[in-house]
Length: 222
Image (cartoon, rainbow, N blue to C red; front, side, top):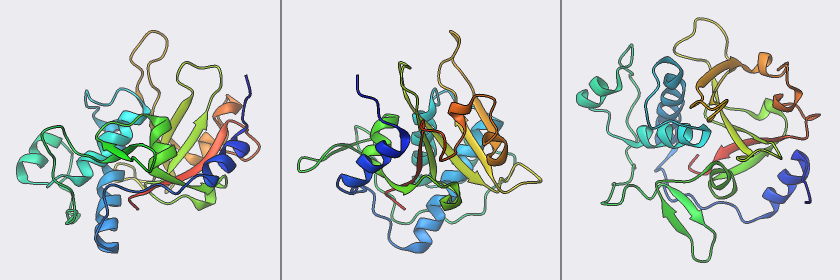
C-alpha cells in the first residue's frame, strides 16, 4: 500500500479545490463569536464530558454545533459550565431542520452535499483549509491533524485552544479525544502544545520532523 508522509499529504490536500463552507458567517464579529464559543465548548469537554463526544471528530462536531446555538438561559443551565460566558451569539447561524443542521460538506463538488455529521477525514478534506506544518500558524480554534497509518481509524484531530478559561497559566492549550482505546471508550485530554511537542511517542509530536503530523488546518467557516 502506498503511504503518504505528512508533508506529502498536505501537498495533496492543498492541491484540491478549496472547501465550500455551508455556513457563511456574516462578518468578522460573527466569526469572532463563533471562534469564542467553538473554543470554549471544545475546552469544556475536559471539564465535564458530554455523551455525544466519543472520538476526535465528535469533539469538533459538538463544539461547532453548540457554537451555533442561541445561548439562552436554558442553554446555559443545561451546559453546566462553571461560569456564564459573555460572548455574543452568532447572528448568522443556520436554522436546524428535521434532519439536523447541514453544517458540513460531506461530498465533493459539483454535487456537494451537506450534513450535520462528518468524520475526521471529511472534516479536514472538505471543511478546512491547510495552513502548513508550522505550529506558529495556529490560532484559537484551529485543528492539528495527524494521520497514523496502520490504525483502524488513522485520522486524528486536536483543537488548539490557546488561552483557556479554565486554566490560570499558559496560552498554548490543546484539547482532544483519544477515541476508543484499550477496549474502553477513551477520554478527553488536555495538554500544553509545548508538552505535546515532547510527547513520549514521537508519532504524536506536532513537529515538521514527524511525518505523521500532517499540519495545521482552519475550519472553512472561519
